[in-house]
Image 1: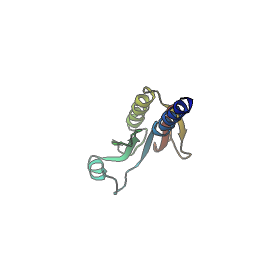
Image 2 (image 1 turned 90 degrees about the vertical axis):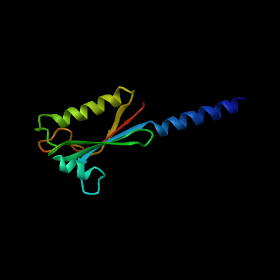
Image 3 (image 1 turned 60 degrees about the horizontal axis):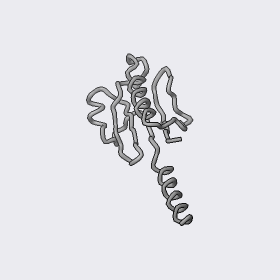
Image 4 (image 1 turned 120 degrees about the vertical axis):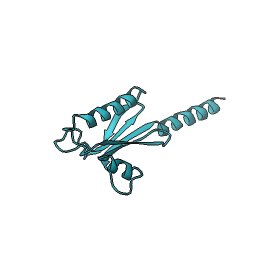
Length: 116
């Protein structure tokens, strides 16, 4: 009975460890992106991609230039996305080394959120 309990607990914990992560990326859009035409035609050239724990992708076009000088819209949208992920109990565990959250030119990078 103890062995069965141990196996079930290990399976549950292992499954949780691998399935509980959000990834958020913000980069300039290129012509191979699925939203390229709709973003570019609407004067957007930066896209935020969110990958949830089940692997679903969501995209959001960000204001043209991706710059923080665009009325702070990109920072506000990024803040909303981060807040919604954090409110689910996730914590920022890593970001790529080239992430540039506060820059004079653009917001870009990758952020990783996980259940602690």
